[in-house]
Length: 236
Ligand code: TMP
Image (cartoon, rainbow, N blue to C red):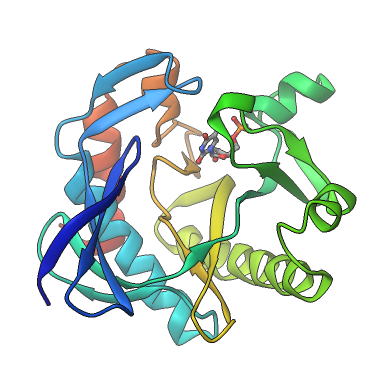
């Protein structure tokens, strides 16, 4: 498969068209941003790690009945994915209070939620990705009732599969963000990435942060945290 024109450049990835209209190639960058692009930096090696970690986890999900956009890893940074129309939602799943949920509800970070919490944000940088609910999503026609029910069911299933899998690697899955896409035949599939950029991963024993919060909060040891996740999940 050959890259043709660049279709899109985001904060952490570029997406290229290919000679086959059903497929794209994503290329992961080392660039990092936080707070809607206000904080900018580079995390050396991040692109390759996020590419490999994402593909590893997407394969696990596919094997367990969750359809994804993953097709084939081309090299360290680049992967062939199915061409989809992205549903313009950030789907956030939370097991333990942290980040914006802790701020909003006044819950200390680390408090276990009595039930898994599902949130949606409308993907729009100019608006700062505002939180929305089912009514907004249906009224704005970002998804149908059936599509939203499918997305929620996949999100809970992904949470169970990832929580169990990561536990084996000594990682606690605090929360994470998913994006879904629609293929040309109308199927909802998991898209985007699952990486230390988009998940909170804590060491199960020490609660040390092994994710992008080290960059967001200037905690140091950013590259080492990403390398540690790669090592624990892929053994390298
Ligand atoms: P939050 O606590 O800042 O709302 O983040 C919840 C989860 O979503 C966390 O695992 C980090 C992830 N996330 C993204 O992937 N992209 C974003 O732009 C933001 C704000 C959070």
